[in-house]
Image (cartoon, rainbow, N blue to C red; front, side, top):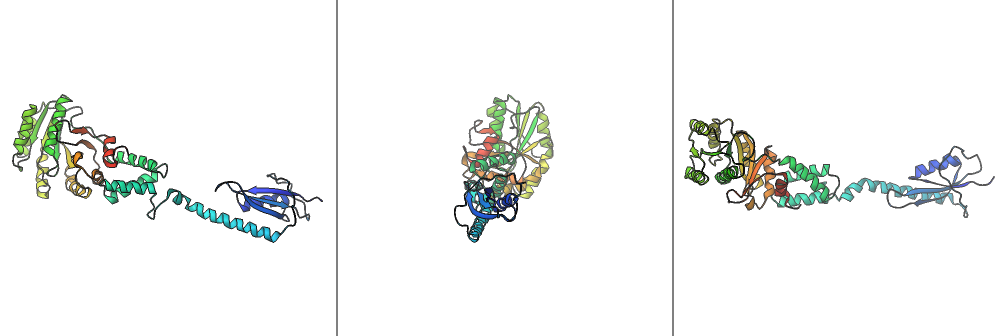
Length: 368
């Protein structure tokens, strides 16, 4: 009987050998083995085999086969050894393939891809607290569409849109609004009130009234009264709950009433201020924070104020901020939207609505 010589291919040795057995039976003799194909993941094992002549080959095999020449004496032991080497090579490639995502992504010892690690470094350099930045970037990397900086950066931007959500600015909206600006000393609350009032008058054409409850700082009343005179809006001083209620009631026609508070951070003063503001339960409390303050310090401030009824955030002094990504520390402590930002001393030019692009640029830098 003429020898039947066929060539079989499979993605791995087992599949190729199964094809040989299926076509030529258990007595098949392997003539030649080799790897064929291209790059990793596309290589195949090619086995050339013949029927031993001691039995009939199976007729059930419908796979690929092709004629081949014997081409000389057959060393079965050598072919088996060759096949074993191929198997070991494939096992090594499989082990490499399991590590491939880490290698391709270039993950570092802490599990971050180079692009993610670069984002962490950049945000830390921009003032972000390392632990907060690391957590945000890791979350972004898990949901990113790829391992590159563009993909992880876009995923991070999506996260920041939720982390630093914008709110309607104080000078916009329907109906009457009573807004109290609270916060530590030196963040620019009184100047911010003047900017907001001017925007409300010039842009939104609202009727505005100003109230100060700051009886602690010398010249506080004169300061806000001067702004009131320049803009032609009424101003009031409230020393206690009764005075605050009277001032708000006196301006019942005002569409926007802005309340300036003392810049105090000690617990007793904060408690007294919270008690005073209970006379205006309708008031929105906007926590004013300087973007030029470090992340750790911002977190400490937020912790002191967040149980006092704060519902919005205002970031000031963006123009002075060397590490503006520190604002991420605020959002990690207080889940309140940002109503506006300021970036200079000009009234009303240097106050702006908070938008997602603006807040993201604040953290990541423009054009990133």
